[in-house]
Length: 247
Image (cartoon, rainbow, N blue to C red; front, top):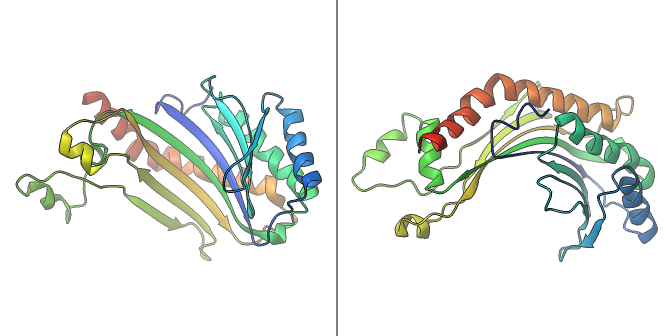
């Protein structure tokens, strides 16, 4: 079971590995890489190229959950939307990081940054920014602005990044994304769109070759869940869910 699935309408986890040098783009290397992923996850059968040149292998989108892997010029990403468990999602992330060094000539020295991200979507038909401001409470220095006659919140997307070690190479970031526009507020008509909360832990710089990519992503996941459980769930996710339910 996914312990986070009850906190939001949709929950997802992703991994991104950013490289200093361009990744190999030969047809043979790319196809061999994606074929190896598909061998373990045969339902990932949709392969295509975006207008940007990014290559994508993904599952069908109509099952309520979906895996995908993306190969860009200097980034490899994997994601699992609504996984049955976080461990299930980690199977994909770890596989990508396990086979990429051999199939894409990737070295731990070439790592610019490695990210582990947990995302949460809350569907809400209303002023997203107003809801976030009320649910999470504005800082005392901002709050008086809401007392201005006729004022309505048009943009409030709080974000914070913190360093987790003395070198600041290990960082955690909390970001909230809203989707309400001034036009919708002016008309008083709001479609049901998601308010997204992203919480990520990032390791900057080269990876210790004795540790490797897979062990590092496991460490990032552990740190991410530790901070989620201790701070983000109680201070951000539950207040948002409660405010939407009350509204």
